Length: 195
Image 1 (tube, rainbow, N blue to C red):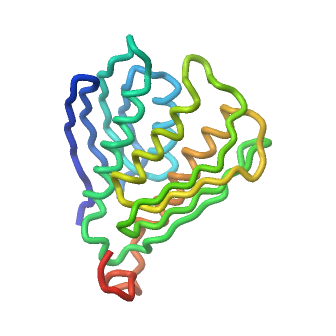
Image 2: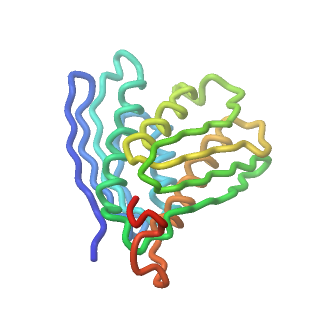
């Protein structure tokens, strides 16, 4: 059974085409027009073993806000669609990822209830041309559109690039765990019987 989704979204601010394969090989083709963001999404794809094909045309003459936030919206929708009825999945996932001096925790619950906690201090306002406050906007959009609980906590770290990259990779590993199939679970992992 293939767990995938393809989503097209077009507004006056962005035109996005995204294909996601949950049970992939970590292959990606990504073009958002924002180099650092592309790099982070490539890391997400590779370390979560998600195949991700993404093309974004955004109003970068304004700034990268709409491009990054709308990509989060579409990725969240794709995660929700690809996971489907959630039968057999582990539901919960977590990872503590080291990157040099940085240590970031990410925890996920594919509960069907959106909640977002972002406890990452980003010391620098920019990494290259990338506005670092957009990291929060991206993950907020992902969590709400996928209807997941998503928590981040910075355990240690001082380099903004490392903190952001560790967050994307930790999210990939946590989501890979949460979407993974547990053969002991023949239904939905909830006493309610649905998520």
